[in-house]
Amino acid sequence: MTFPQPKLSAAYRLVFCDTIDSTNEEAKRLARTAAEEGTLVWALEQTAGRGRRGRAWVSPPGNLYTSLILRPQCPMDRAAQLGFVAALAVGDTLASICRKPLDALCYKWPNDVLLRDCKVAGILLESELGEGKFPKFVVVGVGINLVSSPRETEFPATSIAEQGVGTASPGSALGKFASHFEDWMERWRDEGFAPIRAAWRARATALGEPIRVRLEPATLHGRFIDIDQHGALLLETAGALRRIAAGEVFPVTRS
Ligand code: BTN
Image 1: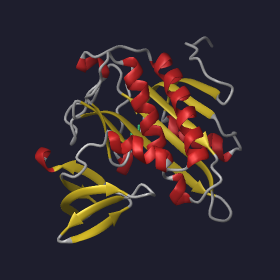
Image 2 (image 1 turned 135 degrees about the vertical axis):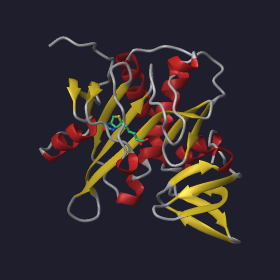
Image 3 (image 1 turned 120 degrees about the horizontal axis):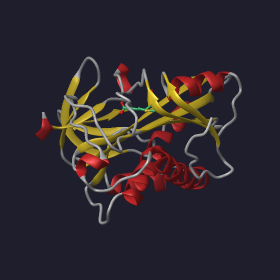
Image 4 (image 1 turned 45 degrees about the vertical axis):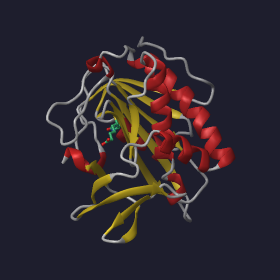
C-alpha cells in the first residue's frame, strides 16, 4: 500500500491505516500484544473515534488522528503528566504550521489545545496497569483539527483552516508532532514535570480567573489558582483550596 510518508525519527515505528475504528483502540490492541514503545498508529479517518468522558470524536479525512504507545517506568499518577507533554507538542506543532505570531494559542486544563478560544486539538490518554504500580503501557491519542471541526459541541471547536491561519496535510502535521513530542519527552525524562508545567502555565487559559469544573456528577465554581507539581488543578472554592485530579474546565464567561 502506498501512503504519504511523514518524516519520523528512529524513535518511532509507524503503523498506517487508511481507515480504522480508533487509533487509540488499535494502539491498545497492539500494546497488549507487546508492540514496543514508539509504535505510532496513524489513520486518515476513524469510524469510531473517541474523546474524553466517553464522547465521540468525529473523524473525517483531512485532520490528524494518531496514537502513540509508551511504556513509562513510573507510577500512574506521574504517567498522567504525559498528557501535558503531548499538549505542548501539539502547541509547538500548531505554532510551526500557523502563520506567526500565534498568540491566540493556549492550553485548557487538563490537555486541550485552543485556538482563538475554540478547541482545535484534543488528547486522550489511556493506560493499563502492569504488575506492581507501573503502567503496562500508556497510549497517547491526539486529534488535531487541520481542515474541519464538529458543529454544536458543548465547548466551541475550530480548525486551522477554518481560522484561516495556515494549512498542513495530516502527514506533515504528524511529522512535526512526533518531533516536538520527542523533544518534550526528553525534557520530561531528564528534568521532570517542572519545565513542562512552566511552559504549559505560560499559555494556560483562565489561570487566576473564575471557572466552572465539571466532575461528574458535581460541578464546582471557583477560581483557577494553579496546577500543582503533579498536574492537578488547584481551585479556590467556598473559601478553601481544592485539588482536582480529573475534570473538565469551562471559563465562566462561556457558560
Ligand atoms: C478529547 O479532547 O476529548 C480527546 C480527543 C482525542 C481524539 C484522538 S483522535 C486519535 C485518537 N483516537 C481516538 O479515538 N481518540 C484520539
